[in-house]
Image 1 (cartoon, rainbow, N blue to C red):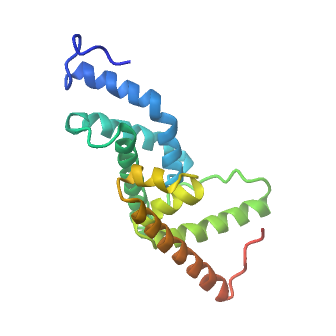
Image 2: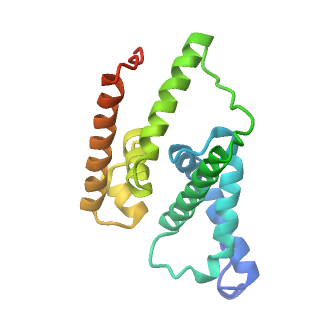
Length: 188
């Protein structure tokens, strides 16, 4: 709980620290979930969540309250996820793959299937704009409603559904094309 305004003045270090502590305790689980849905690998989520709250702390003084703290934190987490994706792309382009991520799927055959399906989906999603990709992931995998996504991304509801429609059309079209090119269909 924030101290009363009699004790701590807004914008002071003590106020900012108290507010960040409240935001952290209130939104940490949700930030982790967002980062996971936005494609941050499990091994990087803790660091990405940390980066999100560090960025929030650094920009508390400029927060004007035009959005909710939840929306503001989502925006920061989204930018952290986008930065991680871009850095991973640069590493791949430079040939620095880094350590292999362990797949926790049971059995080697299932692990291969999961890895292949994930690679196909990642490739399809990488072709979308960041906005389309994030909307698709939040709606399809995260279970967020269109209204919730509109609030989080601070866009009109129709924009959410337009992005979602375009993302779905792309994923469907590219999936059909991928498997029409003679590639094996994943087992269900």
